[in-house]
Image (cartoon, rainbow, N blue to C red):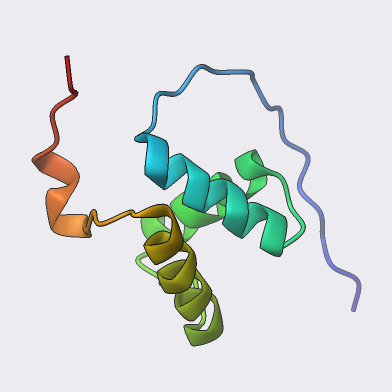
Length: 85
């Protein structure tokens, strides 16, 4: 059975992200051979559905690359971040 593709409309947006988190996301997108926007869309759609977006192998890659970039943020930190002056 052929996969049914959905037509969508994308818009350009300016999103501010934590610097190290963005580096990890870019590295993950490169590892998966996809664009950063595609990766973020996939993560969000999985989150909206209450599903985990990554398999154990991908989580291991994320852990390694996070350590390499010094990313020490966790989910619990998401509501406790302030920007440096």
